[in-house]
Image (cartoon, rainbow over all chains, first blue to last red; front, top):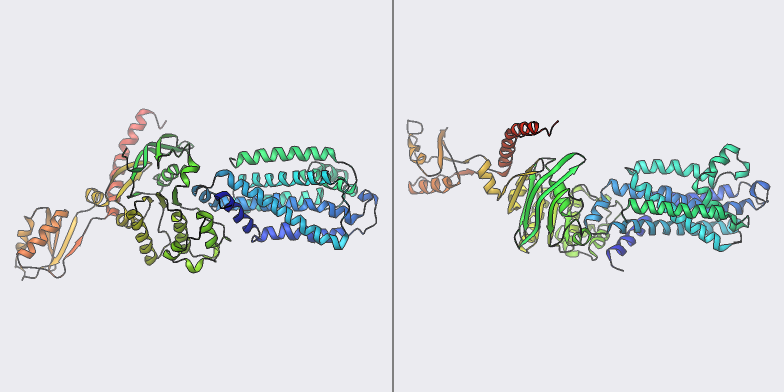
Length: 245
Length: 321
């Protein structure tokens, strides 16, 4: 595929692997934190973990850490840095359609999520074992919706924030509370009421619930799946409008 | 509008917020010609070329570029234009060879050789010097053999040797029939390269013409200096009277054994011929021509002098209230 759009997407994929921020936050950080947190609570099911193996509870949760790192850090920083340095202007002047760059970001973001998730599962399998999928269709649907939603949020942030530094600052401020409260931190049952209430409003909490609950057989998480779907639609529409797709 | 025009702009107007940046500009760029946009910062040059490329939507006016309307068909048009834009970069980790393949769909070996970048093919953009980056931008602008090339601050950061190489490449484009629209602060570059220059100020065209025409119109006079080979007369200037009567000569002065003749371009030939006829051929005859830089300064000074009148008119019309 030697069209301008094909060349742009291939180039973006190649550049993704050379970006230290991507390598650290999307490929390394989720694996390291999953290994630490996943081993911190043992393997005995407790009430705090809805009576499932805590290690499995975290393995099922951490796929969405990859999604959040991609959407809240990798994509916005990459896009804002391109805007700041006039790279988008050069692409536009060279005749790359305006929508092709948004497409490139979507493909690159989804590829990063797929690769990061694969690495996570490959590392988790021999250490903690992979929990069996109770409802694969719902898990895949929630994972896909969450991935598109967070990449869209990333495109949106990248088109709004004025510089790569601003995108990095805002991305980190959004990522860590989401990560600690809605995904990779303590389980909701051991949080205080106030923190649990805050966590309930975080988009990453909904996406994580929608992936983890049907995976571990804790429920269908239909409400979270619907919210994840609505989040995806809203974020995608806004991202498309901002990038003049 | 001429059939051979690659770019035709009429009445282009562009505002940013309430600020008028381009004000009713007309511009023609014929095939096989290099047209330069010159003027001080904020004159509206870059905005004009961005409108021509369809990167900005004009508020008023009509534009036709390579037979297309940049407002309604920008994506199609941009694939036919090669452009080297001011302050537009590339990703730091993109390699030179990858950039050429990305923009041109091929290796561009010949162009990389021509611009001295063949040995940097595997180097990341972030590791290139300012001059190498500028040369790479030129390669990217030319890699698709465009019929119109837009160059904004073409030789910024280039050393003199690289500058000459780039000028030669631009000259070759003209020979090949490509139209070039050049935005530059480097007036020696405009003088050297352009068939026609358009002087802009505050979004308007002040004047346009061949560089030499503008230099004659607004620049200083021609100055011819030489040492008189014959013995000087005791009366200073007495043996120069015969030069004073030559066509085109405005003034003749004598300073420390040197003669200085001031006049128009025609004076050069007349003074030379007269010296040969008189058998007094100087070894050090030097001619100083008016430059485009002199002309632009003269033109801007003249426009500044007119500005109070314009402001008075605007005040009268209530536009400033």
